Image (cartoon, rainbow, N blue to C red; front, side, top):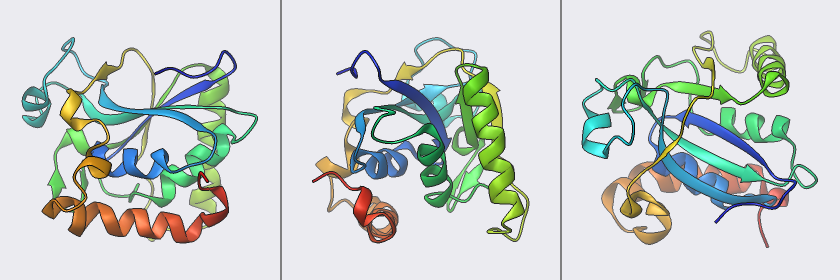
Length: 182
């Protein structure tokens, strides 16, 4: 599924793609979210290849949204609340470059907005440690295997979903109740 003619796409990595996808799936104005891989050197990598940490790819979500409903700025602000952007190459127990915090910008406008939001977050001293989020040009997105799409929605009782993803989604929903899809 793709968005409308006026939709915008953001490609973001913040640890396990299952967690980030679950949050953005609930967000009003988001038309589509796909889990996948970006930033590496191998075309069409498999999950197993990316898990080795040797492909250069990060687990990412590609978020297609309507900028008349939600801005790129707000997409990024939410992104920074649902993962720890100060952890280098990890999120919790997920360790490796594939779990890095990264924004893949598609044009100079996205780069500029990302720099602004990252400065805003740094200046607000939300985190004790400095941001390590990479800001790099988008080159390609490779959709993850079908069983990774909608993982949390399809497997809510799986252990990782209950212990790791559900608390992140609950925190998101409580903070952004007015931004949720009806």
